[in-house]
Length: 396
Image (cartoon, rainbow, N blue to C red; front, side, top):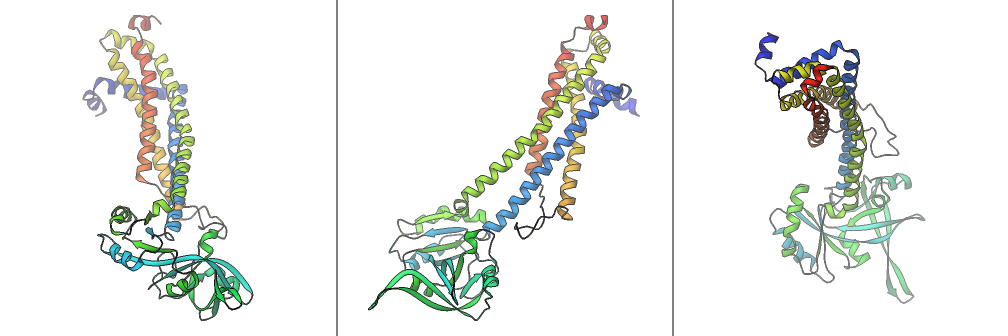
């Protein structure tokens, strides 16, 4: 059966399979083949695992950050009619909601305790950027961490203080409003996210005025928001500024891409070293098979056919390493993520374990890089076999 199969294969493939089998009888050649295949397997597995952990952290971080970021934010110019701008935005195809917001700094006060906050005034339901309270009726919502620290409960009355003064017979006095606490939201890990407070727009306008009005625009998903943002300027007053979730998180997204690229480049050195071991393996096989290669040349084997044979031989060794490395890397990533094998302190980080996420495009890039390096190494070594003079090879 094996002989019949070999007869139907092209000449270079037959030679490659024969030399692959014959290395089993040469201990040192077998050792180098195992080193080359094992090195490629280790490199592929390391690349897959490193990219999987980076992708896992990035996915979790994007979910954490983008869940608190407006899909599209419109900053209106001073004096613009916010309601008219909102009506114009709602007429744009793809927009699902548009909410008028008023923002500004101030202080939250309760029984002598003071906390600086960014006050976000809104109409209707609590916006998506306040997880845990999103979709609830309007009212005052503070971070859950602050409520736990101060011992706050829904129904208590808190004082909101604005830095904008009010003129009175006794001189300028800070604007103060007492508001009943409606609930809390799940604050993020960053300082900025811990210092926000959601409150009704009417209260915010009393404290802050109408100087900083914005529109929080939703468009279904993040990709749709980018398309909608390109059409919004035509429906907005002149001087309006449109920012997408990408614009609002540009430094973070750039840092994540750079981190992944540097990790990929550094771990790729393992694959490069394994490819050099493949060159040494093929060079040893060529040296030990010089008489046979010379005989093949005298029988009519062209240099191109010999070159193809050793390129295929290197490809077989590399293919075995890539297969083992892929199974090992993907399998370990799945097991580590499924069973949460690498826990981290949840009080320090926003996750309780190290997540692994194997992206199909990352896997394709890893395999293409490994294949390209292995192919280049095999071709370099195969050039020696193609350059052998048959007569000189038979003399040795």
